[in-house]
Length: 437
Ligand code: NAP
Image (tube, rainbow, N blue to C red):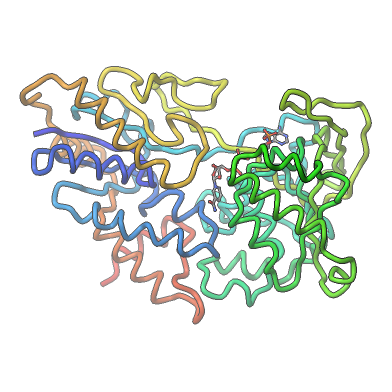
C-alpha cells in the first residue's frame, strides 16, 4: 500500500489525487489536507463568482473525493496543527498543493494606506474567503484604480462595474453584493506598466467588458501599435489586442449613455500612493517598452484613486521546515521535488500562471516523479491511521467530505432566489452547519 498526503484541495491537489488513483488504483490511500473546513481552494474562493461555468469543474473533483481511497481532512493547518516532519514520517510522499494565496507586494511608498488592497484580499472579500470576508472596502469614492493587466485585474474591474441584476446566477456573497450595490465608483482605471502588446488578459475574459449593462471600456487609440504589428503576436494575444482595438473604436456618444467607464491606461508604472490615512491619489510614471521591459521616462503624473486594488500576482505561503525560494515566492524545488518524500505541484511549484487545466499535467507529472523515487515494496509507513492517532491526541476538529456535503447543502438551502449558494464566510458557521442534521 502507498500512503500519499496532499496538502491543499484546490485544482492542483485534486488533479494530483486523480493521477495517484490512476497510478496505483486500490493500492493507494490518499489524505487531502486543507486549512479550511471546505474543499476546492481557488475554485471556491478565487474564480470569479460570475464565472459559474468554470466552477463546474468541482464536480469532477467530487468524483475523485468520493473514491474509497481518498479522504478529505479539512480544518487542519500544516505547520501549526501538524508539523511537516510528522507528515513526511507518516506518508510515503507528501505533495504540497497549497497554491499561491498571498499578494505580491507593490513595494512603492503609500502601500500601507487605507483602502489599498492586493487582489488576494479583494477577491477573497467578494468570494467570502474567511480570512478576507471582513475587509470592508470603502466604495464611496469615485475612482477605483486596478493595477495590472492580467485576468485577475479584469475580474476585479468587471465585478466593480456590474449592476446587482448582472450578479444573478452568481455566488457572490451577500456582504459584497450589498456593498457593491451602494458603490459610487464611476471610473475604473486599469493600469499597465507596459503596452497593449504585453497584456496578460485572455480574449474571452476581455470580450466580457463589451457586454456590461452600465459600463463600457475605453482605450486611447494613440496607445495602440500599428495594426500590422499584431500579425507577429501569438493567436490568443492577437485576439485580445483585437478586443482592445474594438474598445478604442467605441464612439464617444456611447459613453454618454452609461454611468461607468473602464479605462485602460498603458505605459504607466505605479510610483507612489498618496493620501492622508486613506488613499486619495496614485502617482504614475510614463514608460516606454524596450526589449520587452518597461523603462521609466521620468515623466510623472497623478490620478485620483479612492480605492486601489493591486492585481500583480501572488506568492506561496512558506511552511516551517520547507525550503522556500524567496525571490520566486514559491517552494524551492526541482521539477516538483523539494526534499526526499516531499514534493510540490501547481502554483506552489511553478508560480501563479496558467489556467485551471494547466494543473492537470502538473499533477500527473509529480506522481511520475514519486513513482521514480519510491523504493519498491511496502514502506510500512502508518499513513492515515498514524495521522488519525496524532489528530486524536491533539484534539483536532477535522472535517471530512461528508461534513463538506452538509455545509454544501446548508449553503444551497440558504441561497438567494437567483444564486446557487450563499457561502458561509466564518469558519465557526461552517463547523456549526456540520453539526446540523
Ligand atoms: P498575471 O496574468 O501574471 O498578470 C499580472 C499583471 O500584473 C501583469 O500585467 C504584470 O505586468 C503586472 N504587474 C506585475 N508586477 C507589477 C508591478 N510591480 N507594477 C505594475 N504592474 C505589475 O497575474 P494574474 O492576473 O494575477 O493571474 C494569475 C493567473 O490566473 C494567470 O495565469 C491568469 O490567466 C489566471 N486567471 C485566469 C482567469 C480566467 O481564466 N478567467 C481568471 C483569473 C486569473 P508585466 O507583464 O509588465 O509584469
